[in-house]
Amino acid sequence: SPVSAAAAALIRGEEPTPAADTGEDSTEDVVEDTTEETADTGAVSAAASAEAAPGSTGEDSGGPGRPFRIVAVTSCPTGIAHTYMAAESLENAGREAGVEVVVETQGSAGFTRLDPAVIAAADGVILAHDVAVREKGRFAQKPTVDTGVKAAINRPGELIGEVRDKAARGEVTSASPGATPVERGGESGEGYGTKLRKWLMSGVSYMVPFVAAGGLLIALGFAIGGYEINKAPSVMDHFVWTQADSWAALLFQIGGVAFAFLVPVLAGYIAYGMADRPGLVPGFVGGSIALTINAGFLGGLAAGLISGAVVLAIQRVPIPKALRGIMPVVVIPLVSAAVVGFLMFVVIGKPIASAQSGMTDWLNGLSGANAVLLGALLGLMMCFDLGGPVNKVAYTFATAGIAVASPSDSAMKIMAAVMAAGMVPPLAMALATTVRGRLFNAAERENGKAAWVLGASFISEGAIPFAAADPLRVIPSSMVGGAVTGALSMAFGATLRAPHGGIFVVPLIGNPLLYLVAVAAGVCVTTALVIVLKGLRKTVPPAAAQGPGGGADPSSRAPGAKQAVAA
Image (cartoon, rainbow, N blue to C red; front, top):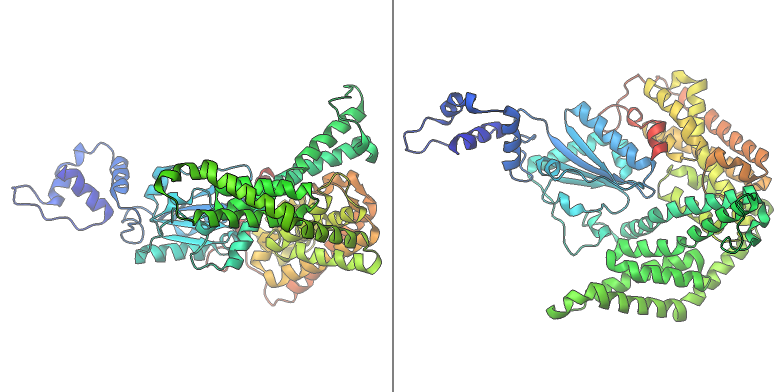
């Protein structure tokens, strides 16, 4: 009706439309005279928001009387700590800026989709992710900032400002229906190096839960039944409810089945990142072939990339309209699986298997100074970006070595060094806030309490709030401590069959006392360096230090231990 249209226009902050020559009152008079007929002001506001065109922002906030509204998505390769840290960082920065921020966390436990009405009413979108955003098309035709997940942790205020600027200029994005998840997952100008990293991280993000589940089950089997449990008969043939060895065999064999999925899942979801669902069939087939021919982890990487490339090539072939319906169900799976299988079995499989065997032999031959140097290098990588791509390369390298039924002693030493080094940064930050609390602001001291739990659980991301607030002091200090721990762990000959768990899997570690000494040494080194470097500053950080994005200190926006551990 003219009345409701006029009211909606006023709420949106638009100029009233002159009344037509029908003898009706002006817009202002109509609204005044019909105030009592309006049952609910909130309902009018909702109607006004719904009637507003997508991306319309009026005076930078969709109109006077309501704040600027942002919807956001956060996701990281493992879907554990970074995902939820970024979400809380954006929400806190939004409150400080007077902006409504609603976040969808696409973590390892899945995700709850934002209400379509909330997306429709949003004035802007922030996509902070290191893997492809699922169902990104929902956010088309909105002013959008697309960035990495760490940017949302370190500078959320800047991202909110960028969205508001884009909304003021009327910039909107559109999703290409033919784009792959990774192509939809970043700016159109991204190079293939960036896309390759996202493809690989997509595979790793789906592989990590299999690593954790399978590795811990196998480790528990060893802990209960001893290292001879890998020779136990199948529990289908022999299982005694009252015997501990039978339960140990059961755990070991379940873990072995879970581990058998690692390479196929890695390959399948690398291909998925490149070519969407059509890439899954050739990816899983290629990954399984990699296991069959003993090409291992390297074979899985190659199979995933080849599968995605083959599917993309097939999709570019002109197809008659009558055949398009059977392409994704019959033709693409058939042709791509056959091509990838041929390449893996006949062409590149044997050279990759030889390379994998050579790398294994090289690792087995490491001893003395070479082993210590490798441990130091892995420690540096684990502490360089605290859960980022470099950290994941070192972690994946270690887990690939133990992802077999009978891993070598060298592979278990590498896994031990990697986990030990990854525990150092958060534990060191927790210790530093305890012994020299005056060098840290109140938020950092509070985060230090959470860092005890995160570090003990092998969640390196617990040190991110400190690194974000003071990267030039925290990151180098963490790298030095991580290198010390990695080197000592290798020198002590500590071994680890479990791919995760922190101090909770110490009973499963070979030479556990020396292993803890290595961790303690790295923690002390990092703590001492952080205290010395921070003590050289002329001023002590105030309680409400300003972060790089203009808002509060990023450390004050880090989630607590409960959230990260629950993730």
